[in-house]
Length: 571
Length: 44
Image (cartoon, chains in turn cyan, blue):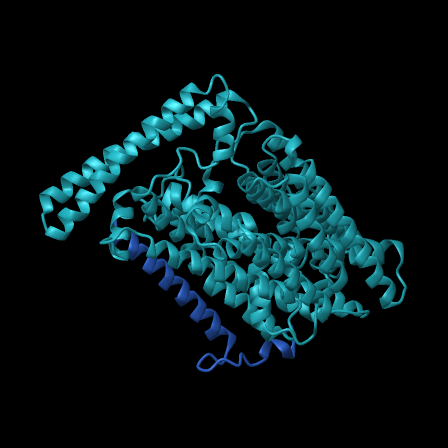
């Protein structure tokens, strides 16, 4: 990066944050601070929901996923549109009717105070522990590639987001997210056009797709019923819908975004905006990765995209194997390139036999390249248990730094930071609001002026921001931390969704039954996690199903007239 | 019980009820999946 890139980066990030703070200066009204301006329109809400979900790692990693595995990952999002319709029809009208600040406040209305505290507590535990990852994950990639200090990257980006989220609350989050996502889209579109322009002469966009298809990168929809396959239409529809329902319906970081709507109409349209555009957005980001794959068939890529990690290890005395694998990789890549050029020539000449022969030879060379890459990963892993062997996160940033002009490099790095800040802001805002509304105002101090609760919310938001920064600074001490946090999320998500599904659909179940059912379901999930080795995604299903089933059994045992009886009438 | 807000106009030309909006979103979803399936078939 040169001076121009840094001007773009610092100017855009501080400019957006400063604008958000200036627009929301002097807000003392609790409703505005927690929910945002009353006139927020559907497009702002839709972009805010999108920006909260899409973190920096989405834009850094997803092209890498497209590069490695093709378009199949897009199926993970197939359940989202249907889940968003359910949220718009069932969840949203109830939240708005009750004029709640948080989703867990609804549990208090529907059941009792202890169930509300349980829901809020599970959210704070899960999100609070995961708070540092949204800052840490992009910081580790960007600091490694740029040569920046990791701690300085974490502290600087963390403090910026804490500052404007504390100052302006939900309104500042919505305003800044709108501009941050505009920067992200601008960066992605610019990268797309540069990439297409840099494809070899004679290779059209359709030709690039044909080539990618030849390497099995364009399998976007898999109708297979095989449960062993990671991404299929069916797992995307069922699993994706389940996860999206939990996330959009019960996670305060999303609920707070769409409750900021000026009316039910604005909130609903904001959700429908995401239902329509989520799949094409993810498709285009994955396609970017596929096109980078095509680009690197003609340009020399590194054998391992995390070049800092590779160089560190290859420079040591025992790095000879890595260097010989690099030589093997480059030789296989040169052969592949020759064959692909022959394939292009044969295609232009309309020589079908030569075209097929060249393509087969290119596939064989590609197989050798992949073998060298796999062995490089194995050597790096054997060299040190802490060595990162997944370099997919580094594919896109490597392409950007090596191939984009200055100015655009700054724009893309700004886009990654904007994504990190926008999702972090949504999380911090939700953590601060839940602590204020469901814990402080509900348990500690019930009667106070709005200004008091606004001040409390600012302190709690700052507290969670500092927790996030501290956690991110020490994140490197734990192995597989990101996966650990994802597992933690799945362990709690199912039970929280179960609480809400009982609240919405099982009107005869009361607070006491669902409270103890949720605790029993959570204990069951913990026990299963300790004893089984199934994929952690299944704990979402198990926790939810157990919470619902236990609630029905307990309610039958307690009886309708017992403590914590059926739900009161909806206001 | 429905609140008056539930019956609020969508404000979208041609999609005056929420039922129609949801149907349109489902149709768009089916369209995306269909296009992606066609892309898979064309380039496999």
